[in-house]
Length: 158
Image 1 (spheres, rainbow, N blue to C red):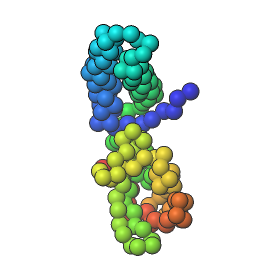
Image 2 (image 1 turned 30 degrees about the vertical axis):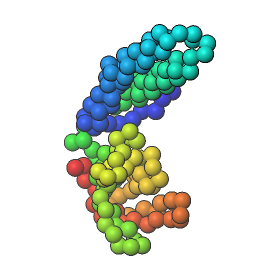
Image 3 (image 1 turned 180 degrees about the vertical axis):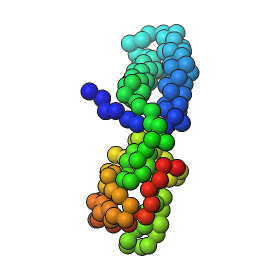
Image 4 (image 1 turned 60 degrees about the horizontal axis):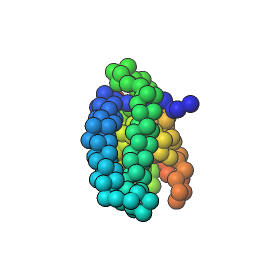
């Protein structure tokens, strides 16, 4: 059974666009590469044909995985989110107790994560450590180089 993932409308559109691109552009490209390699002669000693077939198999596997993710994707109505605690699609303002640095992150599905845009996965160690916490609490999060402590300053649904 696949895991349900929650998406914003933007994230769901990106997922659908990626699947469409793979089906409509990459799949025909892979078929053409196989046809070209097949036209070059003996298939038993044709490394180009083998590579094209392997690339096609990898592409089909990727399409299949993305389709499974899409089948289990759920659209979140962000206006209905509870801001009393940190949930998927919450925007959280944190203060690192060690260095006093403040940062703001939005917790998103793994496929929407983009650290440069301030979006972290709920499946990441920090994301998991923040889920369920309330404003004013301290989140102690185990990371590879120790424990990070964050003050939860604000929770919103921006």
